[in-house]
Length: 603
Figure 1 (cartoon, helix red, strand yellow):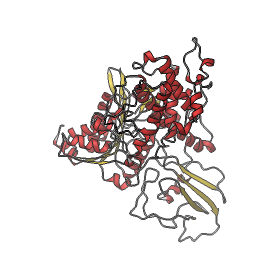
Figure 2 (cartoon, rainbow, N blue to C red):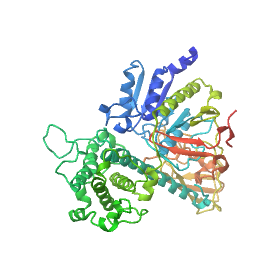
Figure 3 (spheres, rainbow, N blue to C red):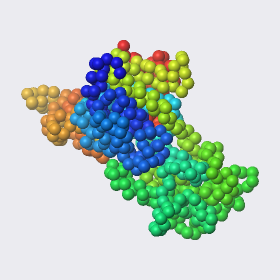
């Protein structure tokens, strides 16, 4: 590993890993083999069979167990003398606060969604701990270094909606008045789409492959039938019995994957401590018997030899841009199954998903929507589902290994305070200038970043007595209303700045929480003073979800940050960036070579 100084820095380091998935498994292995002695891992997920092709620390016997705990046990088998502390929990849980983060020398991210990344970014800023971000999408990857006061933070650049959907992750300028509302709505739509992507992946890569591809392959869908039978030999639910007709087989599959499988998952109480519990769906609760018997009776009117097989046409649905109800999705699901086994039986066992196969797209759409309904996720149209299913990029284990190695290299630089040699590195699919790894000097912080910079924003004019200002934090689920009241006289000794902040209750000093990413809440006087000439502000905080309070509100008001009307992004800085998202990570790729980016590098 080089000099004794470097080895000592590695041995003394206390490292926090967030995420134990594709990158996380490779990263933990690399950290252990590089000499790190004290590593903590946070991951809320459990192991699924679909993880096993790239998350090499896990085995079939581990399915359903905590990723963080199994990863620890696997590494300790070949490196038994190091300390690895796993947390099967959500990084957004209150226990992982600023004080928790302050104990670490560096934080290494291997997360799968933007929301969690932003949360960790803000905690690292508040705790003043260096953060190393990473992401992979297929053959593409990146590693970026974020150090408060030296480089840009993770949120300095906007994260546009991805055009492709990797597996496991505002083109217009609205008016000032509508900016926050429209940005919030866009973010919520983006989160819903990402959730539905997972349903599409499940329907396409697991269910479709299990039913119409090689039935011998192992995946999360194969559990014994829950029929209560006492047979010693478990029943393979996906094997069609000789006495089963298409309708009976379809009902059996439906109840198994959307009902019984969900019930099995719910039995693991640990998984649902911080997640919304899904609802098992059984066919009898969705479609009455008469509709099941009538399903597909329109086939003769809609299907001809000249047209491709279509389940939606067979059940009387015509517009691919309509969002089907749960009942309609169930009808399409059963009819697609019947058509596959009745009209394309010779292909069964060798089929792979093709976005140009109408019947395959209909089956995947209906299955994804039924699963989405079970998990409380918004349903999508056939048109939307086809676009998502056709643009999914699968994870590549080799890319994860390369990125994990680069993370450790940058972590060692940070631990040695060798900040001048820190690099953001992009892993490319095709060589550029004879290089597959493109190093770039870190960029300076964006001065208009509302997370890591002091941003002065223009208040809506006029601000006078009776004006109500609304503060919203798009990520922390916090809203605050500031009612401005005019007062003529102030006590010059007690109120030299001619402003009084009323209605604020201070949090206990020892329980520190994160504010908007760059400070922790200390003991704030019950009647904190801030600066606004000849005016008095009454603050009523309304916090939904996890309880949070604005910290150091006086400083925030002094900088006019209390309005939190987000500044317009410097569009010129971001024209060349594109972000992709997958189940392990997200990725920013510069369309032009990084050297030509308009963002300012550190020197």
